[in-house]
Picture 1: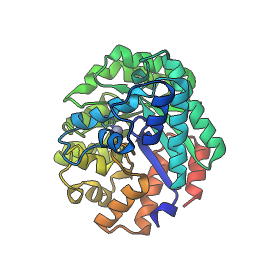
Picture 2: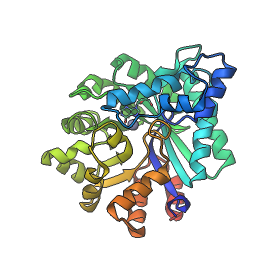
Picture 3: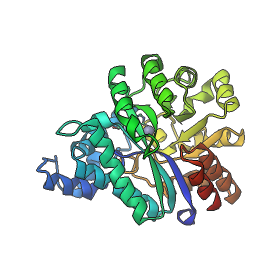
Length: 329
Ligand SMILES: O=c1[nH]cnc2c1ncn2[C@H]1C[C@H](O)[C@@H](CO)O1
Ligand SMILES: [Zn+2]
């Protein structure tokens, strides 16, 4: 049932959503040595195990896919295939995020990395009934200079495939102050800002992401449940939460689906949306994720419509795309 509904996904990492057989195929073509070429063994290396204890452990699963994402052709293909997979479950709009700095291990420049991902995205948009934009991730483990490089190189693609920037990777308390100049610069160019925050560290990071970095959307943000002041700010400013419940349960940001704040936030009119975070690493798709939340919390068709429309408003897409998305439900 859920599979047939039109869907929007705002938070999906390219490197966490690579098909396993594509990893094997690219490795063969590019002579890259994998720890195993057996799809079942590879699956156990890329998909997060049930006994994962933290975000840091979860993030180790990205090393392998990133090994085979170092050429124009592999990036084009992986971006095309992500949209191909998404349209099969009726995703109509997908914001793909990835960190260009992770794809410079061989011969590519930042600009070529972005261009290759856009190329795959365009091809899929021509072939299928799906639209997409890119969010450029800057790793919090890297320097502010690196973030500025990505922002400067990505500028020429703004509104030609690229719409926003993000900070991702392990979350330390107070990370925002290290990236204030970079995010000021990004906003001055016209990038929208979404920030992973309040996932593996406290709600204060959400406060900073909004107040210091100008985030209009927050990746996860589950920890705002812990402090009234931050919760109130998110609510009053209509900040959108890109919620990824399965990822939160896997990284132990939340101990069980039943305790995920998605439902109480929704009931209290916080702008919640549902995404996969990482299709391959988390071993889910958007339909299964929506299905899980709807079953756990007994949500109905009207609730779906409300969350879908929240997602339309929250996209970083142009008005024409937003109107099209509204017409689908
Ligand atoms: O949920 C997440 N939190 C923080 N960082 C994440 C999450 N999922 C993926 N990442 C990281 C790992 C990827 O290599 C990077 C860029 O997509 O973003
Ligand atoms: Zn994420």
